[in-house]
Amino acid sequence: MKWNITNRHTFLNFISLFIVLAGLGSAIWIYQTAGNDSNGVIGYEEEDGAVYPVVPEDSKKFLRDLELYGGKTGVLLYEFRSWFVGLWHGKSLAYTVACIAILISLGFYVVNYLQSGLESDIRNKMNRKRSDENIT
Image (cartoon, rainbow, N blue to C red; front, top):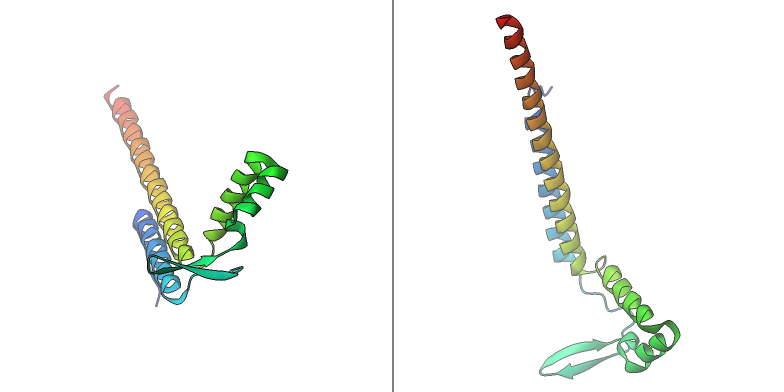
């Protein structure tokens, strides 16, 4: 079967829609299949009926040593790195994939929209020049 797409902008809008649907579908699949990582957990604490993992990096001694050797900047960089690495594991990966798919699709759509606006402006200017030439 041969597809004949006559309107390029419609095709690009279809691609944008495909990107967002594939990304959201992948995010849903990742969310349903992924569990929360428990790497580096040395134990669990129970508080208010909820169970929380205990990680060595959460201890006051670790943060104090980190601040002693790297200063406040070292602590901030460590926290940023931990947050960024956490985006790529477990259920938070599903949110990351969904956001990236939406941003890419939206960017693709906006560029397509701006391009079609520029092309219509160029066509209008060409038509005005032709009408001005015909008048003189």
